[in-house]
Image (tube, rainbow, N blue to C red; front, side, top):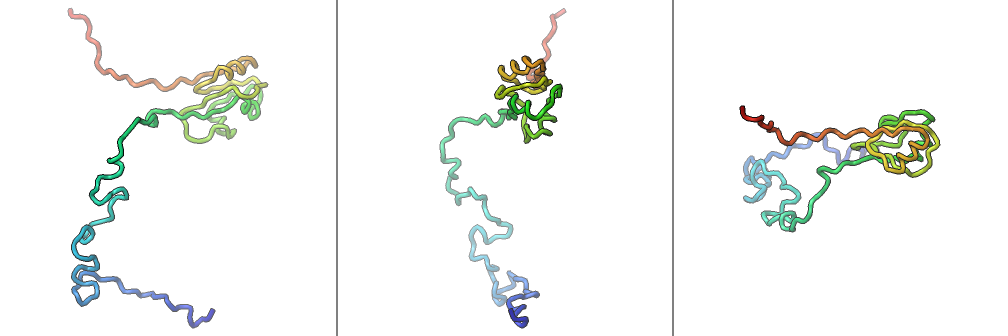
Length: 167
């Protein structure tokens, strides 16, 4: 590398492109925007990626079928009783916070489900949103308790109060 060529190609004071200053500027009359058309006017940005130039969009041309459960589906974190046996001591209380701390139930979820895979050799008090039949039996067999956390109450749909009998 030669120090005399270090600054070649570097232009510190590059002039701004001044458009719309007449034909003599080199960007004159239409200001480098071409003649007429969608992008000739000020304020015209690029269209949406799915825009097809006025043609009926693909999304609207395809027939719609079925529906998605995603709007009301709930996501639960699954933990097996065998994992609880490995991570907790005899007599511990297990809830969502302690499961997260132990690294068994990480991430966004609507609750925790306890399933019965594996062996349980400790007496644990477990608070979760759902227990499988086998998990409940294994917990009870070791003298532990399985407390079901009740879901939030459903909203009242009918706001009308029933009328009493006429006097």
